[in-house]
Image (cartoon, rainbow, N blue to C red; front, side):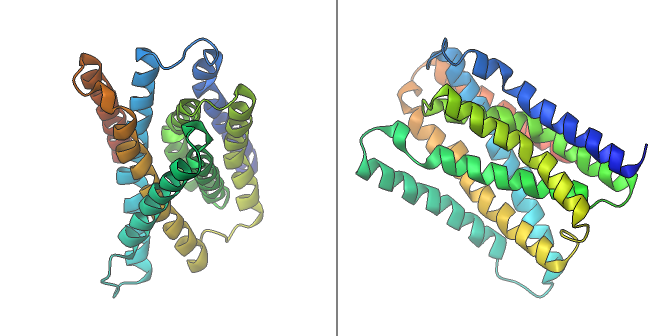
Length: 254
């Protein structure tokens, strides 16, 4: 199998994984509202986003900044992360002022856009791999979190009661972005190997980490304050912790 053929197979597997991960949430869209099982799914999704931020995006961004700017002492990645956090907080405050209906907030669409862009970038990273070993390692890293990220995105969109058609459209676009990135990366083989490409990816990862921290922590806590004195609240905490620990274990291997 040639390297090009391998990348085509990898793109197909990544796409199928993204779709398979949301099959059950989408299937039950019209049947499950915000009952206990659905709330547990939301907590798991929040833990996944928290883990992605702490164990993948922010550390990767910090490592790249240290590699490119050895004499840089100011915590630039952390500052960019804080900007991402504050931006989502500001947008949600703004949305609550402009409308009384929470489902009209722009937060889920912003989250989807961030994940879509990140999927494109990670696909490009696989596409520029010029050896089987390098491409395989990146493929494993993507597969390790692609399904969980797809699931988390789907559950978050459902939290805002978006229509089935809109959720399906966003999920399909998200699922296609990594294969598209693989194709673009293969054509533009030096994209992520240049200093500019690495720097752009590092900035984006730090910013995305801040948005994920907001979605998984502050936003989740506010949506579930009503359960603080109930047994269900501890179950939701357990699911959130499970998602966080899972991403931490994945970080050991990737």
